[in-house]
Image (cartoon, rainbow, N blue to C red; front, top):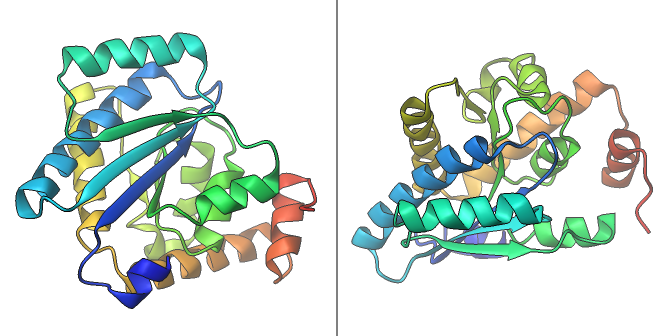
Length: 212
């Protein structure tokens, strides 16, 4: 975050994060990754020094194999894709989240993704599939939610387009104001959830776990 705050017009290292779970289908990843690769290609054409990355945490082996095969078939090479173990504690989750430029929640069926709320509360711009539980809650936050919702459906080609449009808006305008927007949306969600003001209290109530 400090790099963005100090130099809002020139972002040299863009990191998108997502965390795998049982609700995220392989097709959810495919459309998101294909879109992100197209955005990465555009960014590299504008500046060779930009290094777009996607970090996927805790992906199951079967999905990992399927995704690697898809990446080879589609020749997705402009994006640096990194598979990483899932953090062992919420302290580690926080540490990882604070290193990212954009948090992605591609699952169309996940009923409840507390990391969306946590990311926004930390001021990290996030993109969420509109049909998910987090997407439904975001809709209740009013006009401020418009940049976070990705209106996915059953059509792969259309999903690639809407993910791409949403990512371009976030990446091409990756500046301090983007974090102000994310924080304000996190605050609106906090009001809807009816939790206290402190970061630790918010995390404890939303996740049901304390941070040590």
